[in-house]
Image (cartoon, rainbow, N blue to C red; front, side, top):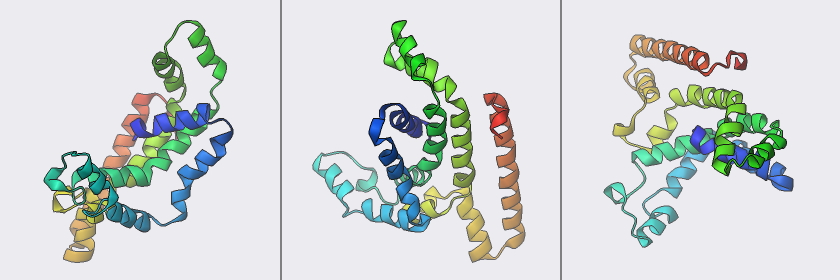
Length: 203
């Protein structure tokens, strides 16, 4: 998720210019519709008769089993699309505070654009990276809608298992135990991640 969100946030914060607010609205606009509707829209877009599959077939791009829907890439695409704004907004808040003169100084010292990004912009935006990662990882870990609508039984996530035990099997003790285990694992991973990132002030 940071790999997709960081370039977008960087482009909006430092290259957006007068279009900055419009670009932010484009990032936030999907939140005006429900999570379920957005995922159903992806189901239509990635369907076998959708324009994405038709375009890829016209370009002779090989697809797994000749389709995109009900595959792992479809589930990943749905997760990235639904949770990308949670990554972009904290990154934008960090990068927007970045003094452009620091990047100019790096350029004056003959740093290439990639070096300016990795050696100056990225370290200064780490609080946004940590906050965005937490905001995307925590809800994504328990998500089951994307895997259920865009995938198959082979793409099930832990959220699908818990949902199935609660609503289909009626195995409430095991469902509750899995929910508690997932919550405890997330807390441990978040604590370790924040400690290793060295940005305890984010919490």
